[in-house]
Image (cartoon, rainbow, N blue to C red; front, side, top):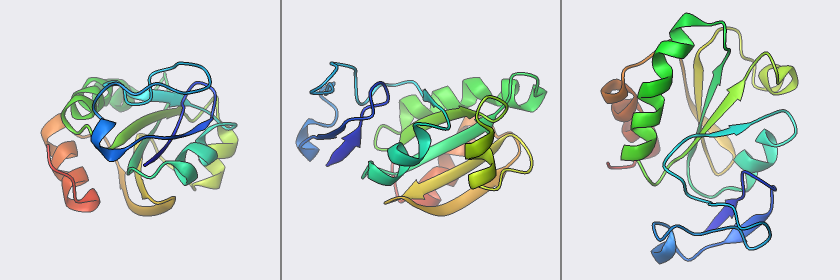
Length: 143
């Protein structure tokens, strides 16, 4: 399994059987499979999405957005429950290139990627249970 380090961008090979054993980056030592969403930006998002073999769900958000702030704890809850999906947050104001690249028109917007390809998109805030169901349906994952 290939996992991109959210801290340094290095692609790491991790055996499937070791995914939940707190693997760390071979280059910088950062945790590869944390229970919290990772923050990425214009410079790091594309490589992370394209080179990570696990499904990746990206939350495009902004600090001034009320629904985004309301959904944030639900996104974190889903990240703790669905350990075989990588959870990423991208501040759309701080990362306008990523927002433009993925056609973000409203926030919050979630995009689910599998093998670097967009497979599902959802705009609007969701509760943790609703988000979990949406991800399970589109990513084929179980809690």
